[in-house]
Length: 221
Image (cartoon, rainbow, N blue to C red; front, side, top):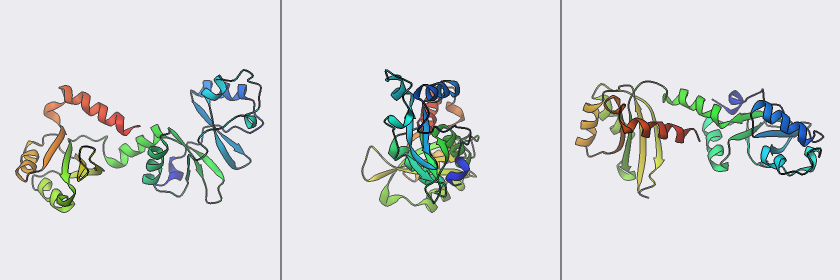
């Protein structure tokens, strides 16, 4: 999946000659907090609702205003993971998409990106989620998969992050195809894997369901 396939083509663009008042009306009508500003095919930045709201005179042209996030761009040929990385790096909820000639193509919103992420990562499918803490020197994907699959369970997706609790360990988030995984948990613990968090059928009516919802909302940032 590349950036081109994630573009929202329905978001209108602003020209430098548009008035701030008109831009605000569009934002309010579409419930958007910002709009892209394009000069011919050149992306100039995003005009935000906050910028307009602070104006004394809203008849001023967009080209006379300070635009934001002109560095929040991705190229249409870049992979999904590059797009996700840029969202996180820029701490933004929208990215402008350019082609190889630096011509504006459209916008990607973080919410739509995460909907696509849930599809390719299998997070929207039934199954348990395990979060493991593994020392970097001990992490072997083939060994981890062997232990899990020996219990008749399949790995649907797996994400590896740096563990914020330790500079030498990893946080491994695993989505499985089963909701009843007590045997899998027992096997992992027998091989001395540390399970930080677990979300499965036996816990869905407890406080861990709330924690799972919080975790999924975190992925949607």
